[in-house]
Length: 90
Image (cartoon, rainbow, N blue to C red; front, side):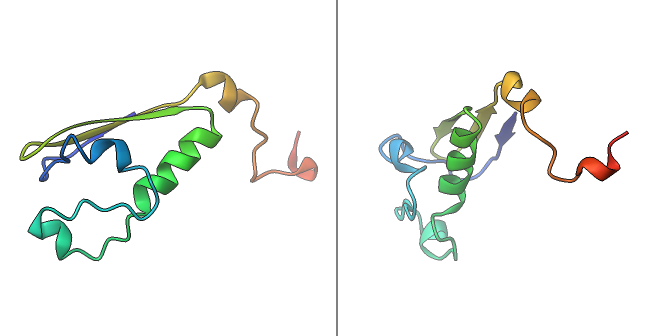
């Protein structure tokens, strides 16, 4: 799955750090004035890691970013549904 934006982009120096909790690249005025906490990408990264997946970023300043998440199919087949218990199974 990939998500692409046409925003301000992420500098090459900051890209290795963007999945760290509370990290915010504060070089752009738009980012300095935002209410972001720097937790969103850290949370996504951790969830992807727990599902034995991988997350990647491709970004260019002034052009935007693409985030790609790759999840293994075998991990999905082994997960028990949270919505159902034995009394509802047929």
